[in-house]
Structures are given as C-alpha cells and as structure tokens.
Image (cartoon, rainbow, N blue to C red):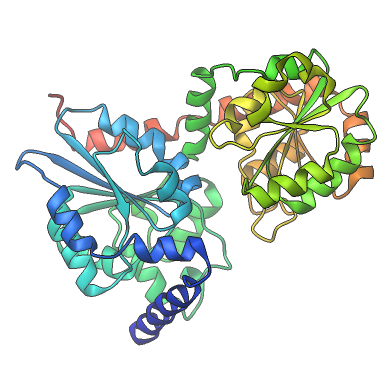
Length: 416
C-alpha cells in the first residue's frame, strides 16, 4: 500500500504543478513550498526549555476549529511556542499573520525526507492535528520520535477507508496518535472497532467554543445599522451561485419591506459584478461611506471585503448559510446560530451533525428554491427558532476544556 501512497503523492504534486500555470490557488500552493527548508531553518529559533507545539490545519475552517485550543495552550506558560501549518492557500493566505502563532507556514508535502527534515527543525513536544488530514510519514515519524500527537474535533464515518477490510494502511495512521478527541459517540464507536478505544475520548467540537468566544468579543460593523434601518434583515454568508439565485428571486420580490446583507464566498471583481446584476437595488460595502445618507434606500448590501461575516450575522433576523447546494455541503452555521438566529441552508447538510441536529430541533431549516425559502420564512416563529439555535450552541461548548484538562493531567504544562 505504501507504494500506491507514494504514487498518489507524485501524481498529486504533478497535477498541482500543471494547474499552477493558470490557477492562482495552485500557484500559491507550489510557490509557498519553494525552498521551505532554508526559510524554515533560518526563521524558526527555539530555546532548549521551549515547549514547542505544532498545530496543523488543512484550511481556514479547521484553523477556526483549532483556534480556541491554540490560544488556550498558548496561555498556559510563557515557554510555549506555536508552530502553525496549513495545507491549503485558502487557510495560509488569510492567517499567515495570525499573532497567536510564533511562526506560520505551508506544510511540506508528505514524504519520508520532508517529515524528518521538518521535525528536525521544528522540534515539537506536542503535535495537534485538527479534524482530519492524516499524513503517513509525518505521523510515523512523530511516533518513532515518541512525540506526543493528538487529533482534536475528529469526526469519522463508516464510509472512510479506516473502517474497510482493505484499510489497514489508513487505520495504522490513527494508531500513531497518542490520543484522539472526537466529536460524537458514533465516531468513538467506529474507532473502538479498530482497536482504538483506549486512545479515544468524546470531547465534542471545538468550533462551538470558537463561536462562543467570537460572540462574546463581538464589535459593531460600521454602516450596517444605517442600512438595516430597523427592517427585517436576512444575512446570507459564504454564498455560491446556486444560493445567490434563490436569494435574488426572493429579495427582489420583497425589496419593499425586507433587507438582504450578502457576503459571497468569492469576492473577485467579476463575481461582484455578477452579483450587482443579480441584485439591481444593491450597494457595495466598499461604497457604503460614499452612500451613507442613502443606505436605507437599498434593499441589498453586498459585502466585498473579507473578515466581517461572523460579526454580520448578529444583524440578521434570519441567517442563510451558503454552500448547501455544493457536494461538499454548507459552511459553518454555528457562526450564525450563536447569536440566537434561525439558520436556513441548501439541501446538502447531512454531513454536518450540528445541521442535522438543529433541523430536528427546529433551529435550522432547508430551502431548495425561492418558493421554499418564502414558505420557510413566512411560516417560521423567528424568535423561538433563534432561541433553539442559540441554546444548542451554548449547550455544546466545552471541548477545549476537555482537551486542556487531559494535557494538564499528563503534566504537559507547568505555569511559568
């Protein structure tokens, strides 16, 4: 199996190298890993008594999931140094200046040489992998060095290769972890079946802790109150074309008594231009200051900046979270639910436990077209649904504390 894994890595890198000729994201993936050994060795300096924690996130969503753990670990002692790695440019490019880490870089592609070189330079005492991304050589080398490694917010499904008759190569990766902190009982039951019962703890999902912290630190966004003008507001976040189509049909029929704030997943100029055509009575957030006196006259506000979405959800009466028409499913609904807001998504939500749970409880809803969107909004008890959503988030916090308690019981930190 290791032969096929190595072939996969070669094909993967070759495909990205070819795509980099025209795809900017692929080019960043390649360029960000050039001469990584020299840059890392010259920039990463540690002292013998430093407690180095390496945290790896696939992308931005996993970073937000790992962030409460990073910040809690960082607060334990002045000797902690955080090394943060990303696999994807969409994570690295946005968080490369994150001040909670001492160094941020792309994770070199998995290989025996890269893993040994990376760990020789990094010298971690603890490795933290967020949710997924299981790399054979890195995990094997951590295990050989007796470096403690943990998985946080893990979630597993029967369809994954770990649990297939042919999946021993993959399940052996999990055996290299010191501890696996999973989100739910079904994940633990699956891991129990492959001999990982003693290494598995149900801790929950650290995303709940992250959104609770973010809500407690909420700050207003300039010009939004003027735009909302005390009307009924829908905030739509991380939207894709299928989401935007039904939102445009809906809001264009309700523009006289409702407002829409839309933060698209893609803010490139050509996409913003398309949205302006889709929502004829819209104003761009970047133009808000120039239109401050007339903001209340627009039905739609298009957010063409990054970094506001989690704060914007608080302004909505109802929140629509995009991505639910994509095969990968919708984006993070907890960012909206934490503010006691009912959530609406597209039909592809079943991969996400919180989305399934909230739809059963009545805090989240599904709409596949503009007619259904209208029916959902018209029939909804907004206040009741919002309370259900908010309570659900608060009741599921605490994963970070469980993880930190385990680390402290293992005497991994000494206050300094």
